[in-house]
Length: 589
Image 1 (cartoon, rainbow, N blue to C red):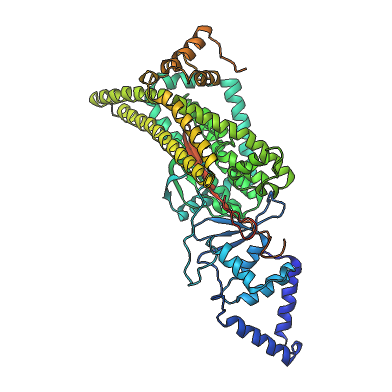
Image 2 (tube, rainbow, N blue to C red):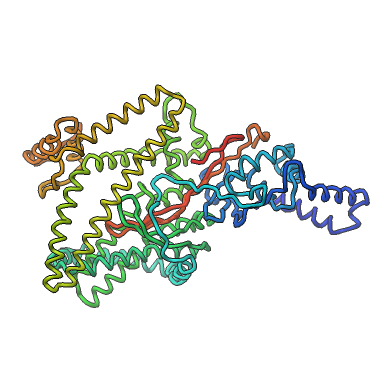
């Protein structure tokens, strides 16, 4: 437990007095013995509380964006929990030796409030035990539920153990020594100037397109680069003093992804957390330099295509819209671990005449402004992207089916003709084609299920609101039926179609009309004009500040179109914080 210097001094003074028999009178010694005996006797409130097995008290969250910095606890399952000072102090006294009376006296002295054993019992039973911080009354460690954060990396499996991940982090840690890092950044500037302003990438693209056999080694190189990206997060975490967790792979949204669990970075300083966030793209920089060096040694032009792909991956990873590296960078700059959990509170607080949501009011003013700006940029983008996918899903499916049919026939011809490398390349392309389609279906199913569950829960006991929600749902289903059911809409994307924002808006505009008009009017109008359409601390338990927050797991990575996530860091991934509101209510966003 983290305590103020004056508290430490007071404890040291008490300790030194206790060691000196002359400092205590017989009466004082008898009182101390009586107090000790009382604390050891079973209390009418139950056995003395103690921490659950494997729980670690980490300390204050450095660089916090809250007005009052919270402290952190980590459970045995890896879930990080953000506790207010009162609950953190209480957890620090739950050692199985302190009884409720002794805990109330000591805690009350520290916070300068009068506490009764019943107050402590309330906090234990209603706050700390439900979160899995304290063991149950029978001594067992509870299996508390982990949070399910918005847009988290759910479909994943660990492949590399924590021990191996830490060894890899140690191996690559020297890359983060300042002289090495500075040399790498200077080298990147020089390499980019040479490639984009002197040499160019035209020949790399031409040779790669003219020799399809290059796809297989290029694909393997991209996969290797994504794996190294994840090792970069692990190495940066180790350099800052953290311990990376498992590495693995899975599906993030609609894309294959790698991840590294660097949830332990939450206990590091802000600078160390930012280093961990940027460790992946820094390894991408190292890959760029190594690839340019390989080109100068071999003069093999397709190598430079990998350099271009790595630059695109760096830009992709730095986008703060979903849980990629850019998201965690914004979270660590502002000191608010789970930004997505603030979307609802920020939007509700923006309604004129409504008081700010408590989850927004606890933030520092500049942090609140920054997160509000982030919300008003990210939410419209997410909504637009979701609507676009929903409306154009038939076209996406038709195009994927057409490509799959061609690849299937090419695979048969390649193997029958003895072209094993070409056949394997086609098989890999089939797999790469199928995985995003499966990911889109899973993503839409989760969105529909989560949305229906949330609506049903939040309209309980409110028939009018539930009726309006049902009507809105019916309208959405009808609009989707106009796009998904008619066979006319299952037409492959054509060569002349550009996939611009303008075309997407036009498609939405014609949606309520006849199914055939969804394609034909939008496409014919755009093709004929060849233009992009435009669109125009208090008394316990009554009001004590006892907010706790479960931190998202941190993780991340992306393979071109193959994405991975991490804190859990993909190249995409994350573990999430938690918050307990004012007593006696508890909220876990």
